Length: 410
Image (tube, rainbow, N blue to C red; front, side, top):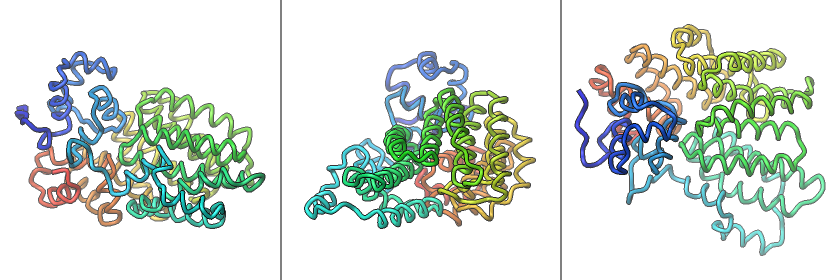
C-alpha cells in the first residue's frame, strides 16, 4: 500500500519526494515522465516505491525537470529551504565561480608581487589528491579552495616551461574539484571544474594531463545523465591518446586505461553492451601492460580497477548474477580507500538487488568504519541506506537506523 504523503517532504522516501514536488508544481506524471525521457508507468513505480531510484544521473534529470536540487530528492538536511551541503563546499564553489571571493588570499599574493611557488603547489596538490584517495573529504575541502586560487594565479604569472608546469597543476586542481563535486551530486559545478581543467590541460601541452581531464569530463557527462555524449567522448579521447601512447610511460598508459572505465559504464547504462565490453577489454589490455595495480597520476589503475568496473557495468546492464559471481574474485586491499569503499557500495547494491539485506548492511557498516566521511556524504551511499530501510529486514535493523541517523537521512 502506498504511504500517504505528508505536508512536508522531510519524512518521505525519495520517490515520494518526487511526487510531492511534482504535485506542488502542477505537473502530471505524463508531463514529468516526458521531460526526463521516461514512461508514465516508470514514474508511477518510482513515486510508489515499486522501482528503485538509485542512480545519480536519473535523480539529477528529475531534479532539473522539477527545478530543485538532487539533495531535495535524496533527503539532505535543509536550512532556509536550501541544502546545507558538506562543510567547505561553499568555499569550493566560490573558488570555482569567482576567485575574487577569496580576497584575503588574493590580496596577500598581489601585494607581494610574488607568484606562488610551483614546488609548494605540487606539494599542496599531492595533499589534496591524497586526502581524496584516503576519503578524508573534510581535509580535502579545506585545502582545495586555496589550491584552485593559487594554481590559477600561477598560470597568469609564469612564462615558458614554468607556465606549462603551472597549467599542469591548475588542470589537476580542477580535476580534483570535479572528482569531489560529483560525489556530492554537484554535477553542474563539477562540469565547470572539468571544463576549466581541460583548458589548462590543453595549454600544458602534456598528453597525459589532457587525457586525465578528458577522463574527468567523461565521468561528469555520465553523472549528468548524458550517456551518449559520455560514450562518444570516450571514443574520441581514446583516439587522441592512442596516437600519443608511449608503452614505456606508465602514466599515460594508466590515464588511457582509466578514461575507458567511465565510458564503459556510460555505455552500459545506455544499454550498449558491445561498446561497454570493447572499452573494458581495451582497459584490460592497458592494465595487463602495466602488470600490476598502481597509482600513476592518481589513477589507482590496474587489473583490479578494471575488475571493479566489470561489476559496475554488469549492474548497469541488469546482470546481477554476473556481478555477484565477480565480486568474490576481487581483492581491493592494495587500492586507495576511496576505490575500496566505492566498490563496496556497488557490492551493497548487488546484495540489495538479490534481497541479501543482512549482507548488504554488514558491508555498508564495515565501509563506514573504514571511511566514514565518504559513506556519510556520497550520494550513492545515502540512497542505498534509504533503499535498505525500505525492506522488511532493514526496517528492523537498529544498526542501519543508527547509521541513517549519523548520515542525517532520518
